[in-house]
Image (cartoon, rainbow, N blue to C red; front, side, top):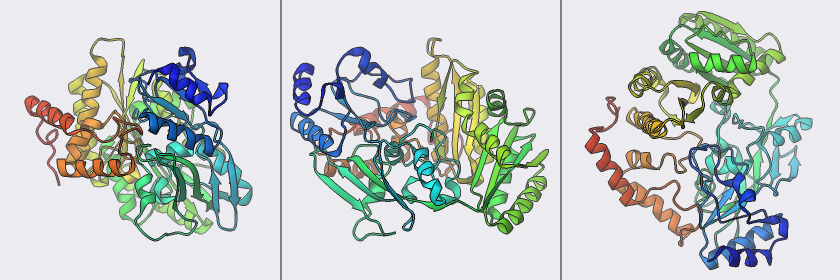
Length: 484
């Protein structure tokens, strides 16, 4: 359908300021946080309520116009990358907190509500929303649903999927569905878990009921510095093996430490090769016991320095440095490519070593930031897109790091999703029969392939071509690390 004809049809549903057609208005929507890939959409719409969302989807389904749902665009896998002949459905105006239930400990919100705004609204009741991505000041709960976001405290309190009770979803045909319920469990197939992390490929979320938790009586964080990255990786496993489940257990290597300290001035040890932040929370007695145990474990694992935050302000500064690591790295390199893979904790030292070897092989610096407690790693590859061929070399290095994760028994994503960035690596992690099951699910919800097409699940042809390319390069299973 021609652009102007679609514009006229949408104007019958939406006011003038809710349909964007001019290039200067479309430009902010050409990419998400993965800015290496850009594409102007045909149109952007900004509905104000669920009824308008339903009408838009019915129209696009009837006209076979592809639709890409979008929050605030903080995603890091190209999951909200537009299509030239498609529509961007922005949910930014569905941004109301509909209800806080302090007795049932739930919040009912629209998808455009920012992650941090939920905790801000619940704080007066002594409650908060646990998943806390580094972008929580800006990212929306709808985007968190799409990617199954985690955060620095997901080790103890879980990912988005563990903290959502119910979704209101609009299908591609415009039908409204209720998935899940207000209880801790609901009968039938677990469609709630299926929808969370589906990257907007199965339906459009228009309302979310999340679980709230009581604010802990006390939280305290230990900072430990190491002169060797592998020692820090070993310490992670020792803490968990001791039966301590930290609220957060984060790791940064030397380049990431230096970048964050220059940016935030959090008091980090800039001469360290690696640093761990281990936070424990709970009752006063529990925290006191665990802090002492963690300090002793860090020292046993050859930490060169161990510090405990002496105040709430210092605790917040420690976390601010970690949550600012991505933009901090952006200050020291023209561009950076943020990867996202997950590995078994006990394989962390060898994966760090192999990542360092790959960094030297490709002559591209890598700064490492980890949700170390659950094995979710975020290597940041530093490059300059102005240098011919450097982006392509960066993508190849990123792909090898992800395939290394698969080789040691891990996965190609922990919380950023597949999007367009990792679609080739889906061909490595899953075989042809498994990928066909994903395609069958997509067809069941979206037979015309209109919701976020081209993302998440590769075509059989793409996988055949990628496997052939790997064979020609002699990559084999994955870079010299045997499957467990």
